[in-house]
Length: 422
Image (cartoon, rainbow, N blue to C red; front, side, top):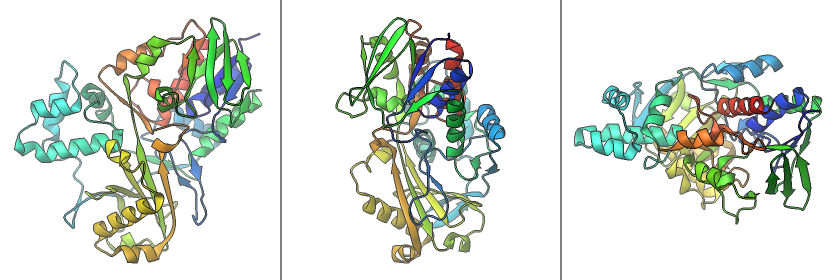
Protein backbone atom coordinates (compact mmCIF):
# COMPACT_ATOMS: atom_id res chain seq x y z
CA UNK A 1 0.00 0.00 0.00
CA UNK A 2 1.33 3.42 -0.97
CA UNK A 3 1.75 6.12 1.67
CA UNK A 4 -1.34 8.19 2.45
CA UNK A 5 -1.06 11.86 1.56
CA UNK A 6 -2.75 15.00 2.87
CA UNK A 7 -2.66 18.00 0.52
CA UNK A 8 -3.49 21.39 2.02
CA UNK A 9 -4.76 23.73 -0.70
CA UNK A 10 -6.71 22.97 -3.88
CA UNK A 11 -5.18 25.52 -6.21
CA UNK A 12 -3.30 24.53 -9.35
CA UNK A 13 -0.30 23.11 -7.46
CA UNK A 14 -2.35 21.09 -4.98
CA UNK A 15 -4.63 19.72 -7.67
CA UNK A 16 -1.72 18.78 -9.92
CA UNK A 17 0.04 16.96 -7.08
CA UNK A 18 -3.21 15.24 -6.08
CA UNK A 19 -3.81 14.05 -9.62
CA UNK A 20 -0.33 12.60 -10.01
CA UNK A 21 -0.21 10.94 -6.61
CA UNK A 22 -3.72 9.51 -6.72
CA UNK A 23 -2.99 8.12 -10.20
CA UNK A 24 0.09 6.44 -8.72
CA UNK A 25 -2.06 4.68 -6.14
CA UNK A 26 -1.60 6.89 -3.08
CA UNK A 27 -4.67 7.49 -0.91
CA UNK A 28 -4.97 11.29 -1.20
CA UNK A 29 -7.11 13.67 0.82
CA UNK A 30 -7.24 17.27 -0.41
CA UNK A 31 -8.28 19.98 2.06
CA UNK A 32 -9.33 23.41 0.75
CA UNK A 33 -10.17 26.36 3.01
CA UNK A 34 -12.35 28.10 0.42
CA UNK A 35 -15.79 26.88 -0.62
CA UNK A 36 -14.47 26.19 -4.13
CA UNK A 37 -11.39 24.69 -5.76
CA UNK A 38 -9.01 26.61 -7.99
CA UNK A 39 -7.23 29.04 -5.67
CA UNK A 40 -6.13 32.12 -7.55
CA UNK A 41 -7.77 30.78 -10.70
CA UNK A 42 -11.31 32.07 -10.45
CA UNK A 43 -13.50 32.26 -13.55
CA UNK A 44 -16.87 33.75 -12.63
CA UNK A 45 -19.94 35.24 -14.25
CA UNK A 46 -21.41 37.83 -11.86
CA UNK A 47 -24.88 39.30 -12.48
CA UNK A 48 -25.02 41.44 -15.59
CA UNK A 49 -21.95 40.00 -17.30
CA UNK A 50 -22.61 38.42 -20.68
CA UNK A 51 -19.69 35.98 -20.44
CA UNK A 52 -17.38 34.65 -17.73
CA UNK A 53 -14.63 36.94 -16.47
CA UNK A 54 -11.33 36.12 -14.82
CA UNK A 55 -11.11 37.47 -11.29
CA UNK A 56 -7.70 35.82 -10.97
CA UNK A 57 -5.25 34.34 -13.47
CA UNK A 58 -6.12 35.30 -17.04
CA UNK A 59 -3.24 34.82 -19.47
CA UNK A 60 -1.06 31.95 -20.57
CA UNK A 61 2.32 33.63 -20.97
CA UNK A 62 3.63 31.75 -23.99
CA UNK A 63 3.35 28.16 -25.17
CA UNK A 64 3.99 26.71 -21.74
CA UNK A 65 4.49 22.96 -21.79
CA UNK A 66 2.40 21.69 -18.90
CA UNK A 67 -0.46 24.14 -19.37
CA UNK A 68 -0.67 23.33 -23.07
CA UNK A 69 -0.49 19.60 -22.34
CA UNK A 70 -3.47 19.81 -19.99
CA UNK A 71 -5.48 21.90 -22.45
CA UNK A 72 -4.84 19.26 -25.09
CA UNK A 73 -5.91 16.49 -22.73
CA UNK A 74 -9.35 17.93 -22.05
CA UNK A 75 -9.87 19.60 -25.42
CA UNK A 76 -9.64 23.15 -24.13
CA UNK A 77 -9.43 25.86 -26.74
CA UNK A 78 -7.37 29.00 -26.46
CA UNK A 79 -6.68 32.01 -28.61
CA UNK A 80 -3.79 34.36 -29.01
CA UNK A 81 -4.03 37.81 -27.50
CA UNK A 82 -3.93 40.34 -30.32
CA UNK A 83 -4.04 44.09 -30.64
CA UNK A 84 -1.77 47.08 -30.31
CA UNK A 85 0.02 48.17 -27.17
CA UNK A 86 -0.74 51.85 -26.78
CA UNK A 87 0.71 54.38 -24.33
CA UNK A 88 -1.38 57.40 -23.40
CA UNK A 89 0.37 60.41 -21.87
CA UNK A 90 -0.89 63.98 -21.56
CA UNK A 91 -3.84 63.14 -23.80
CA UNK A 92 -1.56 61.88 -26.58
CA UNK A 93 -1.80 58.34 -27.92
CA UNK A 94 1.33 56.58 -29.14
CA UNK A 95 1.73 53.00 -30.21
CA UNK A 96 4.02 51.53 -27.59
CA UNK A 97 7.55 51.01 -28.72
CA UNK A 98 8.74 47.67 -27.45
CA UNK A 99 10.95 49.34 -24.87
CA UNK A 100 11.83 52.91 -23.88
CA UNK A 101 15.11 54.57 -24.73
CA UNK A 102 17.90 53.19 -22.59
CA UNK A 103 16.32 49.74 -22.17
CA UNK A 104 19.08 47.97 -24.11
CA UNK A 105 21.66 49.64 -21.89
CA UNK A 106 19.70 48.51 -18.84
CA UNK A 107 19.60 44.89 -20.03
CA UNK A 108 23.31 45.00 -20.86
CA UNK A 109 24.10 46.32 -17.39
CA UNK A 110 21.89 43.63 -15.83
CA UNK A 111 23.67 40.94 -17.87
CA UNK A 112 27.05 41.99 -16.51
CA UNK A 113 25.95 42.20 -12.89
CA UNK A 114 27.99 39.89 -10.64
CA UNK A 115 26.45 40.68 -7.26
CA UNK A 116 22.70 40.88 -6.78
CA UNK A 117 21.02 44.16 -5.89
CA UNK A 118 17.49 45.31 -5.33
CA UNK A 119 16.07 47.10 -8.34
CA UNK A 120 15.96 50.40 -6.42
CA UNK A 121 19.67 50.14 -5.56
CA UNK A 122 20.55 49.05 -9.08
CA UNK A 123 18.79 52.05 -10.66
CA UNK A 124 20.36 54.40 -8.13
CA UNK A 125 23.85 53.04 -8.77
CA UNK A 126 23.82 52.87 -12.58
CA UNK A 127 20.93 55.00 -13.84
CA UNK A 128 20.67 57.89 -11.38
CA UNK A 129 21.31 60.66 -13.93
CA UNK A 130 18.48 62.90 -15.05
CA UNK A 131 18.71 61.59 -18.61
CA UNK A 132 17.48 58.22 -17.29
CA UNK A 133 14.41 59.62 -15.48
CA UNK A 134 11.94 58.20 -18.03
CA UNK A 135 13.74 54.85 -18.05
CA UNK A 136 13.65 54.63 -14.23
CA UNK A 137 9.94 55.37 -14.23
CA UNK A 138 9.26 52.84 -16.97
CA UNK A 139 11.29 50.10 -15.27
CA UNK A 140 9.56 50.69 -11.93
CA UNK A 141 6.12 50.57 -13.53
CA UNK A 142 6.96 47.37 -15.38
CA UNK A 143 8.32 45.68 -12.25
CA UNK A 144 5.27 46.74 -10.24
CA UNK A 145 2.67 46.14 -12.92
CA UNK A 146 3.90 42.87 -14.40
CA UNK A 147 5.87 41.34 -11.54
CA UNK A 148 3.76 42.92 -8.72
CA UNK A 149 7.15 43.62 -7.15
CA UNK A 150 8.40 46.18 -4.66
CA UNK A 151 11.48 47.77 -6.26
CA UNK A 152 13.08 48.05 -2.80
CA UNK A 153 12.89 44.26 -2.39
CA UNK A 154 12.93 42.66 -5.83
CA UNK A 155 16.11 40.98 -7.09
CA UNK A 156 17.70 42.37 -10.23
CA UNK A 157 19.14 38.96 -11.10
CA UNK A 158 15.67 37.47 -10.74
CA UNK A 159 14.15 40.09 -13.02
CA UNK A 160 16.99 39.64 -15.51
CA UNK A 161 16.41 35.91 -15.79
CA UNK A 162 12.67 36.39 -16.19
CA UNK A 163 12.69 39.34 -18.59
CA UNK A 164 15.14 37.75 -21.02
CA UNK A 165 12.75 34.81 -21.42
CA UNK A 166 9.59 36.85 -21.89
CA UNK A 167 7.43 35.35 -24.62
CA UNK A 168 5.67 37.79 -26.89
CA UNK A 169 2.74 35.41 -27.34
CA UNK A 170 -0.03 35.61 -24.76
CA UNK A 171 -3.09 33.37 -24.80
CA UNK A 172 -6.50 33.18 -23.15
CA UNK A 173 -8.55 30.04 -22.55
CA UNK A 174 -11.92 30.30 -24.27
CA UNK A 175 -14.63 29.98 -21.64
CA UNK A 176 -12.34 30.54 -18.68
CA UNK A 177 -9.19 29.31 -16.96
CA UNK A 178 -11.25 27.41 -14.40
CA UNK A 179 -11.85 24.65 -16.95
CA UNK A 180 -8.26 23.60 -16.30
CA UNK A 181 -8.69 23.25 -12.54
CA UNK A 182 -12.06 21.54 -12.97
CA UNK A 183 -10.41 19.03 -15.27
CA UNK A 184 -7.77 18.32 -12.65
CA UNK A 185 -10.46 18.01 -9.98
CA UNK A 186 -12.39 15.45 -12.01
CA UNK A 187 -9.20 13.49 -12.68
CA UNK A 188 -8.40 13.47 -8.96
CA UNK A 189 -11.81 12.23 -7.88
CA UNK A 190 -11.80 9.60 -10.62
CA UNK A 191 -8.58 8.29 -9.06
CA UNK A 192 -10.23 8.07 -5.64
CA UNK A 193 -8.94 11.32 -4.20
CA UNK A 194 -11.24 12.81 -1.53
CA UNK A 195 -11.68 16.59 -1.65
CA UNK A 196 -13.03 18.65 1.24
CA UNK A 197 -13.85 22.33 0.67
CA UNK A 198 -14.67 24.92 3.38
CA UNK A 199 -12.05 23.10 5.42
CA UNK A 200 -9.72 25.64 7.05
CA UNK A 201 -6.59 23.94 8.38
CA UNK A 202 -5.25 25.86 11.37
CA UNK A 203 -2.65 23.47 12.80
CA UNK A 204 -0.38 20.92 11.18
CA UNK A 205 0.90 18.55 13.87
CA UNK A 206 3.61 16.25 12.64
CA UNK A 207 6.37 13.80 13.36
CA UNK A 208 8.36 11.73 10.93
CA UNK A 209 5.96 9.50 9.02
CA UNK A 210 2.77 10.97 10.47
CA UNK A 211 0.81 14.21 9.98
CA UNK A 212 -2.39 15.52 11.50
CA UNK A 213 -4.21 18.52 10.02
CA UNK A 214 -6.54 20.13 12.54
CA UNK A 215 -9.24 22.42 11.17
CA UNK A 216 -10.84 25.56 12.55
CA UNK A 217 -13.96 23.59 13.46
CA UNK A 218 -12.04 20.88 15.28
CA UNK A 219 -11.86 18.13 12.68
CA UNK A 220 -8.65 16.11 12.38
CA UNK A 221 -7.34 14.50 9.19
CA UNK A 222 -4.36 12.14 9.32
CA UNK A 223 -1.88 10.76 6.81
CA UNK A 224 1.72 9.61 6.56
CA UNK A 225 2.88 12.62 4.52
CA UNK A 226 1.55 16.08 3.70
CA UNK A 227 1.97 18.64 0.94
CA UNK A 228 1.37 22.23 1.97
CA UNK A 229 0.14 23.97 -1.19
CA UNK A 230 -1.43 27.12 0.25
CA UNK A 231 -0.50 30.54 -1.18
CA UNK A 232 2.62 32.16 0.25
CA UNK A 233 0.49 34.95 1.73
CA UNK A 234 -1.21 32.42 4.01
CA UNK A 235 2.14 31.04 5.18
CA UNK A 236 3.36 34.59 5.86
CA UNK A 237 0.21 35.58 7.77
CA UNK A 238 0.33 36.02 11.54
CA UNK A 239 -2.03 34.16 13.81
CA UNK A 240 -4.65 36.94 13.69
CA UNK A 241 -5.65 35.92 10.17
CA UNK A 242 -8.47 33.42 9.94
CA UNK A 243 -6.61 31.17 7.50
CA UNK A 244 -3.11 31.32 9.05
CA UNK A 245 -1.46 27.94 9.59
CA UNK A 246 0.80 26.89 12.46
CA UNK A 247 3.15 23.91 12.65
CA UNK A 248 3.71 21.72 15.71
CA UNK A 249 6.59 21.29 16.20
CA UNK A 250 7.67 24.53 14.54
CA UNK A 251 9.72 24.44 11.35
CA UNK A 252 11.71 27.60 11.98
CA UNK A 253 14.17 27.30 9.11
CA UNK A 254 11.30 26.99 6.65
CA UNK A 255 9.43 29.90 8.22
CA UNK A 256 12.53 32.03 7.75
CA UNK A 257 12.92 30.76 4.18
CA UNK A 258 9.48 31.78 3.00
CA UNK A 259 10.13 35.25 4.44
CA UNK A 260 12.84 35.50 1.77
CA UNK A 261 10.34 35.23 -1.08
CA UNK A 262 8.52 38.34 -2.24
CA UNK A 263 4.75 38.35 -2.50
CA UNK A 264 2.86 41.11 -4.28
CA UNK A 265 -0.72 42.13 -4.73
CA UNK A 266 -3.08 43.12 -7.50
CA UNK A 267 -6.29 45.05 -8.03
CA UNK A 268 -8.38 44.08 -11.06
CA UNK A 269 -11.43 46.01 -12.20
CA UNK A 270 -13.68 44.47 -14.85
CA UNK A 271 -16.06 46.88 -16.56
CA UNK A 272 -18.61 45.78 -19.16
CA UNK A 273 -20.19 48.41 -21.39
CA UNK A 274 -23.12 48.44 -23.76
CA UNK A 275 -20.80 49.25 -26.63
CA UNK A 276 -17.09 49.01 -27.46
CA UNK A 277 -16.71 52.79 -27.43
CA UNK A 278 -12.91 52.50 -27.56
CA UNK A 279 -13.08 51.21 -31.12
CA UNK A 280 -13.92 54.75 -32.18
CA UNK A 281 -10.35 55.61 -31.17
CA UNK A 282 -8.64 52.51 -32.53
CA UNK A 283 -10.15 49.20 -33.62
CA UNK A 284 -7.05 47.23 -32.68
CA UNK A 285 -6.47 48.16 -29.05
CA UNK A 286 -4.94 45.32 -27.08
CA UNK A 287 -3.35 47.02 -24.07
CA UNK A 288 -3.48 50.63 -22.87
CA UNK A 289 -0.80 52.02 -20.57
CA UNK A 290 -1.40 55.36 -18.89
CA UNK A 291 -0.49 57.47 -15.88
CA UNK A 292 -3.99 57.33 -14.41
CA UNK A 293 -5.02 56.00 -11.00
CA UNK A 294 -5.85 52.69 -12.68
CA UNK A 295 -3.01 52.80 -15.22
CA UNK A 296 -3.22 49.59 -17.27
CA UNK A 297 -6.21 48.38 -19.29
CA UNK A 298 -6.82 45.66 -21.81
CA UNK A 299 -9.58 44.55 -24.13
CA UNK A 300 -10.96 41.02 -24.26
CA UNK A 301 -11.42 40.37 -27.95
CA UNK A 302 -12.80 38.15 -29.29
CA UNK A 303 -14.61 36.52 -26.34
CA UNK A 304 -16.05 39.59 -24.60
CA UNK A 305 -15.87 42.53 -27.01
CA UNK A 306 -17.49 45.06 -24.66
CA UNK A 307 -15.31 44.27 -21.61
CA UNK A 308 -12.38 46.33 -20.37
CA UNK A 309 -10.11 45.11 -17.58
CA UNK A 310 -8.15 47.53 -15.42
CA UNK A 311 -5.05 46.45 -13.51
CA UNK A 312 -2.73 47.88 -10.90
CA UNK A 313 -0.05 45.76 -9.28
CA UNK A 314 2.61 45.90 -6.59
CA UNK A 315 2.82 48.53 -3.83
CA UNK A 316 0.51 51.01 -5.65
CA UNK A 317 -2.30 48.44 -5.35
CA UNK A 318 -2.07 48.40 -1.56
CA UNK A 319 -3.66 51.83 -1.22
CA UNK A 320 -6.95 50.34 -2.42
CA UNK A 321 -7.11 47.90 0.49
CA UNK A 322 -9.49 50.01 2.58
CA UNK A 323 -11.36 51.77 -0.25
CA UNK A 324 -14.92 50.64 -0.91
CA UNK A 325 -15.78 49.08 -4.27
CA UNK A 326 -18.08 51.92 -5.36
CA UNK A 327 -15.19 54.38 -5.02
CA UNK A 328 -12.84 52.04 -6.87
CA UNK A 329 -15.27 51.78 -9.78
CA UNK A 330 -15.63 55.56 -9.83
CA UNK A 331 -11.84 55.93 -9.95
CA UNK A 332 -11.69 53.35 -12.73
CA UNK A 333 -14.30 55.22 -14.76
CA UNK A 334 -12.45 58.48 -14.22
CA UNK A 335 -9.20 56.85 -15.34
CA UNK A 336 -10.88 55.72 -18.57
CA UNK A 337 -12.53 59.13 -19.01
CA UNK A 338 -9.10 60.77 -18.86
CA UNK A 339 -7.59 58.24 -21.25
CA UNK A 340 -10.36 58.65 -23.83
CA UNK A 341 -11.02 62.38 -23.21
CA UNK A 342 -14.70 61.84 -22.49
CA UNK A 343 -16.79 62.42 -19.38
CA UNK A 344 -17.13 59.87 -16.62
CA UNK A 345 -20.90 60.50 -16.77
CA UNK A 346 -20.88 59.29 -20.37
CA UNK A 347 -19.00 56.16 -19.41
CA UNK A 348 -21.32 55.56 -16.46
CA UNK A 349 -24.29 55.68 -18.82
CA UNK A 350 -22.67 52.94 -20.94
CA UNK A 351 -21.69 50.72 -18.01
CA UNK A 352 -23.74 47.52 -17.76
CA UNK A 353 -21.77 45.48 -15.18
CA UNK A 354 -18.72 45.81 -12.95
CA UNK A 355 -16.59 43.64 -10.69
CA UNK A 356 -13.62 44.39 -8.43
CA UNK A 357 -11.10 41.69 -7.46
CA UNK A 358 -8.78 42.58 -4.58
CA UNK A 359 -6.51 39.64 -3.86
CA UNK A 360 -4.78 41.24 -0.88
CA UNK A 361 -8.04 41.21 1.09
CA UNK A 362 -8.96 37.67 0.05
CA UNK A 363 -8.39 35.66 3.24
CA UNK A 364 -7.58 32.52 1.28
CA UNK A 365 -4.53 33.96 -0.49
CA UNK A 366 -3.74 37.42 1.02
CA UNK A 367 -2.04 38.57 -2.17
CA UNK A 368 -1.52 37.76 -5.82
CA UNK A 369 1.76 36.02 -6.69
CA UNK A 370 5.42 35.88 -5.82
CA UNK A 371 8.56 37.66 -6.97
CA UNK A 372 12.26 37.05 -6.27
CA UNK A 373 14.00 38.86 -3.43
CA UNK A 374 17.76 38.85 -2.89
CA UNK A 375 17.91 35.46 -1.16
CA UNK A 376 14.94 33.75 -2.78
CA UNK A 377 17.02 31.20 -4.68
CA UNK A 378 18.62 29.91 -1.48
CA UNK A 379 15.24 29.90 0.26
CA UNK A 380 13.64 27.85 -2.50
CA UNK A 381 16.45 25.32 -2.35
CA UNK A 382 15.51 24.61 1.26
CA UNK A 383 11.76 24.74 0.68
CA UNK A 384 11.95 22.25 -2.18
CA UNK A 385 13.48 19.66 0.12
CA UNK A 386 11.07 17.63 2.29
CA UNK A 387 11.06 17.98 6.06
CA UNK A 388 12.05 14.51 7.30
CA UNK A 389 10.32 12.99 4.27
CA UNK A 390 7.04 14.02 5.84
CA UNK A 391 6.24 17.65 5.00
CA UNK A 392 6.51 18.98 1.45
CA UNK A 393 5.78 22.40 -0.05
CA UNK A 394 4.28 23.24 -3.45
CA UNK A 395 2.99 26.32 -5.22
CA UNK A 396 4.02 29.03 -7.64
CA UNK A 397 6.12 30.70 -4.91
CA UNK A 398 8.31 27.59 -4.58
CA UNK A 399 8.84 27.05 -8.30
CA UNK A 400 12.40 27.67 -9.46
CA UNK A 401 12.37 28.45 -13.18
CA UNK A 402 11.75 31.06 -15.85
CA UNK A 403 7.94 31.15 -15.59
CA UNK A 404 7.66 32.53 -12.06
CA UNK A 405 4.37 33.86 -10.76
CA UNK A 406 2.27 31.94 -13.28
CA UNK A 407 -0.20 29.06 -13.32
CA UNK A 408 2.46 27.09 -15.17
CA UNK A 409 4.78 27.64 -12.19
CA UNK A 410 2.16 26.22 -9.84
CA UNK A 411 1.50 23.22 -12.08
CA UNK A 412 5.21 22.49 -12.45
CA UNK A 413 5.71 22.75 -8.70
CA UNK A 414 2.83 20.38 -8.02
CA UNK A 415 4.18 17.87 -10.51
CA UNK A 416 7.71 18.15 -9.12
CA UNK A 417 6.69 17.55 -5.51
CA UNK A 418 4.66 14.50 -6.58
CA UNK A 419 7.85 13.02 -8.04
CA UNK A 420 9.66 13.52 -4.73
CA UNK A 421 7.01 11.42 -3.02
CA UNK A 422 6.36 8.76 -5.64
